[in-house]
Image (tube, rainbow, N blue to C red; front, side, top):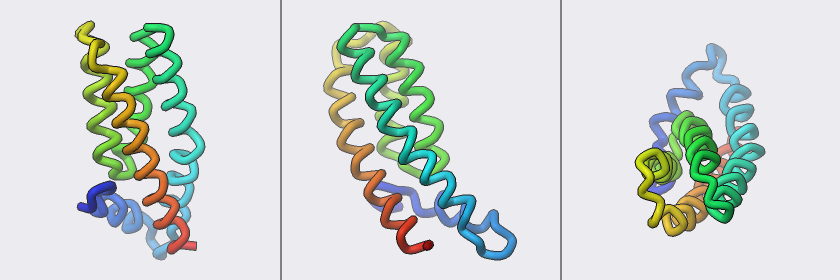
Length: 119
């Protein structure tokens, strides 16, 4: 596992292709890169509006997609934000969202690097 990605997850996704074609992984990365910023913006807008249900839903969605690609820090941040929102313990959520934003940027860069090597 790297600091940003669990490479075992990436390797498993690559192994799913019978002929070594990385298209499935590339498609998943492209979807994540397109959707991740949208989910992050939804989290930030929800925090600003103190709409904790919106924050929880967006964190849940981002947690799933980041877990599918081994973006472990993003997944953990989302899990923490989601749980805090569910429990009504939202005081630390804005600070966690800043960590999430940083980890998301790092994961996006790492995934772009992987995608570049696969093409």
